[in-house]
Each structure stands twice: as structure tokens, then as C-alpha cells.
Length: 293
Image 1 (tube, helix red, strand yellow):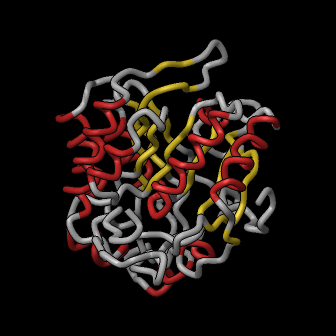
Image 2 (cartoon, rainbow, N blue to C red):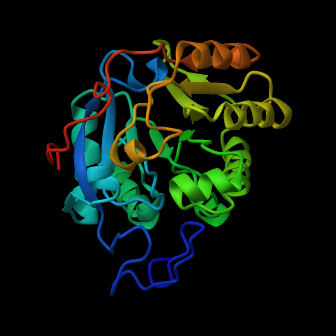
Image 3 (cartoon, one colour):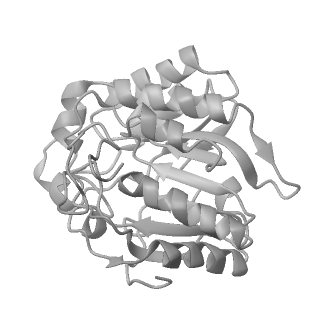
């Protein structure tokens, strides 16, 4: 899969043993941090934290990315597949509720191999696939049996917005197709006795200022194409960072009016999460210090 890379919809077809494509990723997994993360949805982080592995490089180039030092600038450390499997086991030993793979798209083949090794050596906790959701359908299909919980973004409805802010043409078509495949793989949510999600799907949507039409259309698609009890996570923590400061439409935080409008839109979903508006900006952004790598 790496010799003619088509893991995502950029379909660069480069040999990643020799060079890199749009994502900037080579043949080895590159990580920025691996630790117990407390800022995911309550059924993911729980009381112990989610065993979160932040991968470097990304197949989306979001102008507002809060993790831009690793997504755009590719800060991180390359590790072997064997070492990646050890990291999974170390997080389990730290009592993580799950292994949370953040921005894993460019490394799906390596992750599958690392999971196979780790499971032979005693990895038992659920695997969470936390993605910007611009994979090819074939990539998502290859994860069946390896991923327990899918945590995909559904960022954009309009192609113009997806291209402008993430350089991702045909994003909505790709992302919704992937979500339907994810739902097929994990059709029912399963929780343990402590309310930690063991299997299932949570669709995330980050609300952008001045773009509530995107939110309305996205929530409408979910309502029309998925079961009424689908879990939806509405993220309201947007703040202008990186190149977003240069864009007049998204160079501010959400207003209270926008928040109330989104809250009304989301009221049709009986299960899910919605963040409150916050006065803080950096509270959700980890310090990418290579710890745990």
C-alpha cells in the first residue's frame, strides 16, 4: 500500500519508501506524543484517560489546525513498527481505557502491523480511530476487525469550503461514504460497566464561525441517513490559530448567538455531546514534547 500510496483521496501514488506525498509522511510511523489524554468525549476518556497516540503529518491541510506543529510542520520522531506496538502496550499498562489513534490516515498499513504484534503480546483494550475522515473507502475497509470505535470528523458540506480551508476536494462525498462503511463495521454501540465505549461510532463536527450553513447541512445529512440514536459530538472549542487569523470569516471565536443556533440544530439528536463556549483557547491543545514516544 505504501509503494503506490492511495490511502487517502489525494491518491498521490508515490512510493513512500523513496519519497513523500501530500501528507509529508514516509515509510515509518512518526509520532509527536503518546499519553493519557483527558479531553476526549467522556465515554472515551473516562476517569483514567484515553491512551492517545498523536501521529505527525496529515492528509488535510486545515488553515485553523490547532495541532499545526505536527500536522503541517511534521514535528515528531520516527519509530519502528515494533516500537509502535510497544507504545500501545505501555499505554495499556498505564490503565488507559483505549488506544486512541489521532490523525492515523497516512500510517494505516503500519498501524495494522503494530496492532497485530501488540495483540499477540496481550493488547486487549479497544482501538479508537480518530480521523479527519478523508481516507479512501478501501482504507476504511482494510481496518475492519482492527478498529473498535470510529471517531471521524464530518467537517464540511460544501466543496468550496473544504478546498478553501483544508485542500480537500470532494470531502463531503468521501467522508460520508466512509461513515456509512464505519457504521456497517460497528453497527451498535457497546459500553462497559463504567460507561466506556467499547465498540461504536461517534461523529464529530467542529463548528466554524460564519459557517452555520455547513453545520445545518451536515446535521441534516446525519439525521436523514443514519439511525436516530447516532452519537454526534458537536465541538465548540474553535479559536483562530495558525493561518485562520488571516481569514476574515474565521478569525474569531463563535458568538453566543451562533452557539444557541447550533444548540437548537443539535437538539434532534438524543445521544451525543456538545461543548460549552469557553473563555480559554489553548486548553485542548497538548504539548507535543515527544513524551511516551
